[in-house]
Every structure is written in structure tokens, then in C-alpha cells.
Image (cartoon, helix red, strand yellow):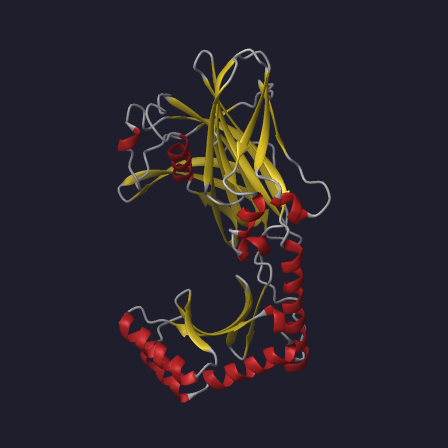
Length: 411
């Protein structure tokens, strides 16, 4: 066990799985915890991966560290040579979420060194799914933080005014890279805009002894158009959007220096959609007071803002946001995995036709579910209560009973 003098202890171990050994990390917090994660970066590369595990509160948690290491390597070394180092240095940020109330986050940061299991293997020959065989990592002593040779800033920044106008008028980013004594030959920039995987690249040759390099990254559409293209899920989920810039700075000795910076700009749709979510909550609260004589305060689905779940008389319900609509679900039962898919689909279509515009029978996570869709523009408690009553009538019908008798499996 690695004793750290901090809130928890970690140890690395290998376990035989499928005739091969895999590298794991055990985290022991000394108290019950319901989640553990390990964020991994590779020294001098911008690639990053997070291994995570969660579930029933436990004193010990295991994270598949080998898979996380390999994920970082595949992102970092995209082509040959790339994997010339015989040892790799990984930085680990380990977090544990306690199960007590209120929950606490315990955190440690460590640096480890491990032998490169793919030394001499061409990147094109790396296995796609199988993990390489990692040795037990060596924990490195903490070192004083090194003064960075590059200072990087990003503009523009939003401070005040109309957010829509600001984003509509912004079609570029300016990066200023100040070098302290390292002559630079070339700078490659990859811009990852918001939470999309769409990337835009810029490569610029620079004057070696300039000391300060100011580069403009033009984007393919102004930022308002890019926000519109994300879809309403992102609009409702994030109050601000991150814009990441990965820089590969090549000095005059052809040594590469990799850095990552980010800027954060506002989501102009967030407040409006947050207000619409309040409409959905208020309607549900009124229905609960009238129909169930209860409060909805404890119905929220943890980590899923704008969603509520409850059980009544053994029946599960969910209510919340999906894209631009408010959805109401009543769970009927799990699908029988041995049932013929085409036959089930045809029976569902027939049942939906019978319901004639009422609740629609759909799949949700391999469950048969009755679904209603609402527009937030005309959502009210009276209509929601009417839909819940119709759910009861349809769910208790002979047609649904026959369908479930034929195709329901074990939950």
C-alpha cells in the first residue's frame, strides 16, 4: 500500500483476466465511498483519459489503470515515431466521493513512471481493443513545479452586454504565446470548439527570436452559429462552453513542446431553458399535491438536472427534458431477450395504432415504456394530470396485458 499521508491510500496490482494480466489501481479511503476516479495525463502531451468506477458504497474501489494508460497513449501517439521513450511518465489526479451526507471529495495527485510496453512497435501495429501488458508503476517523488517556458493567453473574453451579439460577431480567437529564451520555429494549433469533437487546425511558421507570437485562429462559422449547431441538449446542460487549444511548439532544435489552454464563453440559451425547466417542475409539483398529496422535493434524479423519478403502487415513472420537449415515461417491464425483434416491433406498432394518438409504446434502455411528449410552451398541471390518468387506463388495458404476457422478460 502506498502511504501518502493524505485522505486515502492507493496500491497498484496486476490481475489475470482472459489469460492476460491487467494493471489495476485500488483506492482505499478508510470510509465508505460511492465513486472513485483517476484522471491521467502523459508528461509533455495534451492527451487525457479518466478511469472511473461507482456503485454501492464500499471501503475499496478498483480502477482499470492499464486501460486508462493505453487510452492516453493512443491519443498522444497518433503516428510514428511517437513511442520512442522506453519509460512513460503519467500524472494521476485521483478523486474519491464519500458516501456520507453531505458528500465530500477527497483528492490526491501523483506522478508515476512505467516501462513503455509498446517500445519499438509501430503505431499502426498497436492492438485496437486488447491492452498491452503494463508493469507495476513506480511512484515518483514530488518535485518543485517547473517554471513554464511559455506563457499563453487567449482572447476575446466576454464581460458584459448582449451575449447573442457578442457570439455573432466573434469568428476567431487570438492566441498570444510568450517564450522565455527558447527560439521557436513553428507553432501548430488544434482548436476544439465547445464540447464537439470537431477540430480546426492552424500551422504557422514564426520568426525564431521574436519572443512573443500572436496568432489568429479563424473558425469555420461564428460562435453563435456553432452554438446553434450543438442542439438543445447542450444548450440546456451547460451555462458556459469551453474552447480548447492544443499547441505543439517546435523550437529551432526540432524539439516539440506541447501545451493546452482553454477559454470559456457564455451559453446564451442557458437562462431561457432553465426557466422552461422551472415550468416543468412547477407543473409536476402541482400534480403531486393534487393527485398524490405529496411533495416532489426528493424525486430529482441525481446528476440529471431537469429530471424527476418516482414509484407509485409498484410502478416507475420518469418526467423531464429530452432535446426540446418534456417527456413523461411509465415503465411497463423489461423486454424478453429471446423474443423475435421483428415480431416485437410489429406488435408495438399495432398497439400504438390501437392507442390512436395516446401514449406511445417505446423502448427505453431495453424496457417497454409508455411515453408522452409535451411542448413546454403549453405545458400545465391539468394536462400533465390528464396524461397520468390516461397512462393508468392504457397500462391496465387488456391489449397491453396481452403484449406483456407475450414479450416481457425478467426485470
